[in-house]
Amino acid sequence: MSLLLEPLQYGFMQRGLAAAVMVGIICAVMGTWVILRGMAFLGDAMAHAILPGVAVSWLLHGNVLVGALVAAVAVALGIGFISKGGAIKEDTAIGILFAAALALGVALMSSIRTYAVDLSHILFGNVLGVGMGDLFLTGGVGLLVLLVLALFYKQFLVLSFDPVLAATLRLRTGLLRNLMLVLLALTVVVSLQTVGVGLAAAMLVTPAATAYLLTRRLFPMMLVSAGLGAFSGVVGLYASWWLDVVSGSAIVITATIVFLVVFALSPRRSALARR
Amino acid sequence: MPLNDTIAIKKPKAQDPGPGLGEARLDVEGITVAYEGRPALRDFSFRLPRGARAAVVGPNGAGKSTLFKALVGLLPLEKGRILVHGLPLGAHQDCVAYLPQRENVDWNFPVTVRDVVTMGRFGHLGWLERPGKRDRALVMDSLAQMGMEALADRSINELSGGQQQRVFLARALAQEPHIFLMDEPFNGVDRGTVEATMALLDRLKRDGVTVLISTHDLNLAAERFERVLLLNKELIADGPAAEVLREGNLAKAFGSALLVSEGRRLLVDECCGGHEDRGHEERVHGGKEACDDEEARR
Image 1: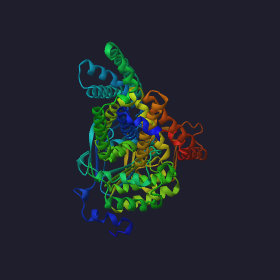
Image 2 (image 1 turned 120 degrees about the horizontal axis):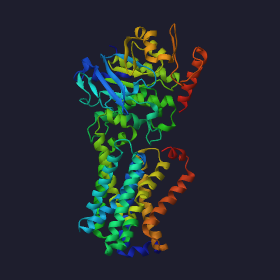
Image 3 (image 1 turned 30 degrees about the horizontal axis):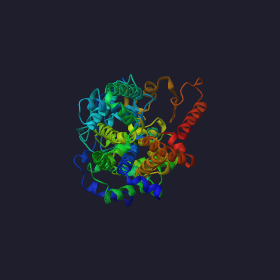
Image 4 (image 1 turned 30 degrees about the vertical axis):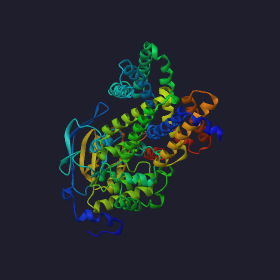
């Protein structure tokens, strides 16, 4: 018991746990849509695309969240623009832009000498450095993302399962796709502090993929995914405390171990392979 | 018109036709559609009155699927216009139902049979509205009409090909459509599903629903549909099956792929392509069936 309680006497650990649970849940629910819509690579790209936005907002003494969001949306639009004609495939466009954004971000960060230490925090997260303001921001943005996903559940369901039906029902498919991109960008931005840009994609994809193996309906899949995301956050953070490893890595490794165990035992493996 | 209890749920609609339902029709006026940069349909026109049942036939690549995609607004028109109830496409919310080709559906998506059919009701709901009592009843009624009630809570990837098709037919019923478009509904499904689909078409006709299907089975089109549209990039013939499916027209549509047009059997080498021995009916027919089996397995 003291194993569990001892770390909790520190405020930074309490805040870290709260942040890890919130990010675990938000990423896992958004991640359900990400894997069903085949947006895993895009999620990874968006996470990396945030880096130059963060750097520029620091240089200009602006709001980091706003800078990150602007960068994520710009890259999403850029991917659409480059792949629009059909000459460059979408995954190629994603590959070009996310590598470019990462390079630009690292270049900008390296020019800000005083923030050299923070670069690794941006890349791999610093969940133990979460302040109360960050917690409120994460919670607020997270609630917004979950609320929008809940309100437009049926539209996103049709759009993802059967885009042709979405079109015949005259749903605003273009608007819904863009809304999905904005929600993905918001999710990635709030997971920045916990797992960093390098590992955000894992928090989006891994718990959702595990839940996919365990459930056969969308809503239960989201609940299980959220539970696994939160579980990975808590267990990973404790592991990082007791084993003295970087927290973001510990959280992602925990989620991956859970996935591998379920994968080894699941009869639905073949369905995942066809995704 | 006598209504038996299986379609009784449509009664309110029959008594109170929505605006324009009395003359429910589909008008296609001189449309030209390009698909992936190449023109797939040229200057194409036809008109379907209320309750009409027509089959679109033509060789592979003739533009059958392009036509259907254009009819639901998935492809932009380069020329011409499409009117539903006399109004341009997009002016209506939910009166057109579309049965997609089976290969275009993600069968591993985590949804049950009931979930899929419930999606048919979404066009009748507001942006933030949840399905209500009437929607749920309609979903179960549509499933019952297709004999799928017992499988309502099954995952869609557990179903056979024929069952999957029935789920999508049930979804189209739940949409309460005025116009029902079916792209190759008889492709790769068992005989029982073909008959269930035809029985559904009979019921829809009694309800005054306009139905347009595409098929590569000329015999089925000739035997079961009063009106046939023969196309190959453009409309070659349109009218009663007996008039449309004449050798001259078929030769124009299928070219050298047309093999035998003897009596009522029509054989077209369009499935596998490239048969060397073109005059041999049995062998080619066997080849076509092998292809259908292959499609059924997918």
